[in-house]
Length: 67
Image 1 (tube, rainbow, N blue to C red):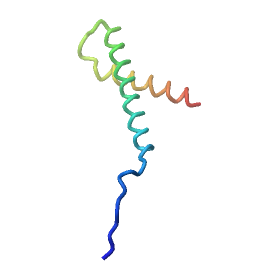
Image 2: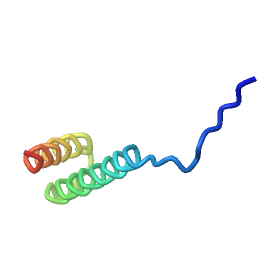
Image 3: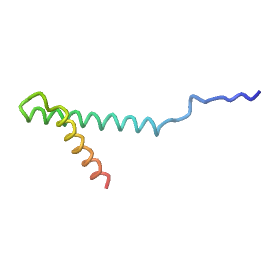
């Protein structure tokens, strides 16, 4: 019988960094979407539009800063 040991001390920095990066990106999108909501005078009913615009702006900024 072959026994396989899995090490729990193995670094998982790549996936952790990706998760943290994704969380930071989502936070920035959320903040921008809220700014758009406030600019609209806090009118309800445009949540998806605000989110999509914030997402597009934030991703564009990410791409531009990476170039």
